Length: 218
Length: 218
Image 1 (tube, rainbow over the protein chains, first blue to last red):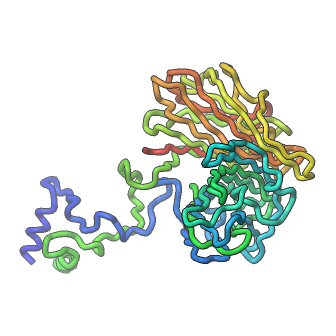
Image 2: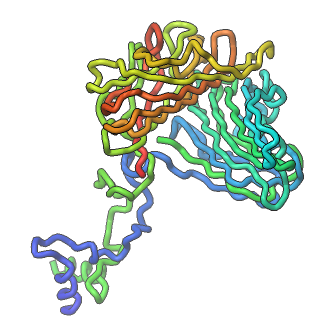
């Protein structure tokens, strides 16, 4: 007891302030929350890792807590060669992914042999008041061991019951015939119902690998 | 008193270090700031909400603290149909928004009737050493569910050496039910520090919407 008191005293400054060394948890691992406005504005809400997954669905955490959400998809690798990587949205918690969308799509493409470089609108990738899946990468993604697609999706104010729901997507993919494809996709979910679930899925086959992280932006 | 000492001693290791159970504040509610480098890299600095506002101006917080600033604009709704959302910059704290700018503007658009789908440069929306407002989002409509959302990055506004680069991406619902993905970028052609940013429509008010300013730490 006396030794502890002496050691404790050694952990105070002469002004009576507790020294940092007196606290045994420099990583503050016991802290479960911090006040609003402290720390970063980008909060990681959920991470999902594909492993022969038919789809990756985010069915919780999309609500009025944040007025925009960012999804980062990293090295999404398809089971089958040449299929499109898609996104869709739900207003019923993921029971149905069929929100009406109007979108725009364009891409820049450059081949590894430097034969092709092009910037073009992709009319086959956009949606016109359609409920189907929206291509994220505007060419089919290769399934060679080093091929995948990465990028991010920004979804604005999904819980609004007033406005349509804008989204902006930027991605890069290496496609099967040795091309780099940078895709720009944007549009809106033409509904005033809150969006509360988001699905990522391949055109056919599974997502064999890849990570998708969902962040709330405060 | 004796029991308090005894209980306190139980929360101290033999080396005089407090155990984690001795700390009673798992939410850190008393903390108002974290040291540089701790927490996320995206720091919310200011939030402004429009309500019949002629403009939204950020006249404080833009300085050398951060070398990149990000503005997220969410469901910005005009009082007048079919007007561009614009930005301008100030080097005198907001007294004058008239920084000389040279910029580019291109867009991708597609309507709900599928009559037009196009990618093109919009020469009417760029500036060539102009001091006027720079469009960042093309012509949102003022129907109840129409608005524009997007983001703007402003690089190193406090530099006294370089011109000030900016890049903006947005999506709008136009009056004739077009989805318009706008890309605006350029530079404030000044070596004076930019210390204020103004958002406004080319005419009328900003009836609703939120704009958030973030600092991005290195």
